[in-house]
Length: 143
Image (cartoon, rainbow, N blue to C red; front, side, top):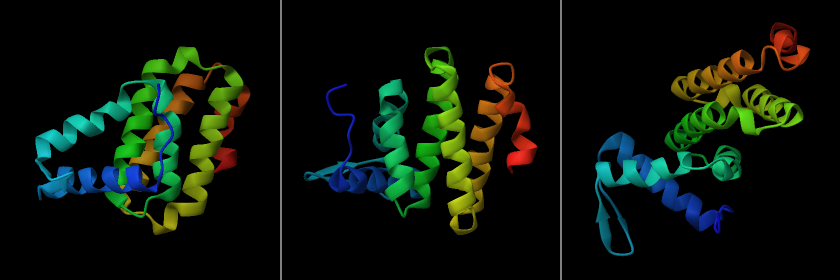
């Protein structure tokens, strides 16, 4: 993955694509008009490789767009589900702790649809990791 780091300009592009995807209003990139279908296809690339997990986290950590946060969360859920067996137990716990901390720190400021998507991600991680480590079974205590 040659370009798995994201910067502010790329974040702005992702936010514009997300806006197009969820509102239907076309966006322009380099003089090219991008429709809802094209935006969806470009955003699906975030789900193409586990190497995009840091980009999804960057979007969550830096975007003010609720739509971009939703796309990042849905992409994380997909990537973690598909690539679960490629992660070590400590990596799985780190991902879980990141999502829980993100919810704790940002939950009150998020739209309900983003919060629900993040909760689904926590549930997926908990389900997949149930037998990996006792920490996954202590979710109620952590919340």
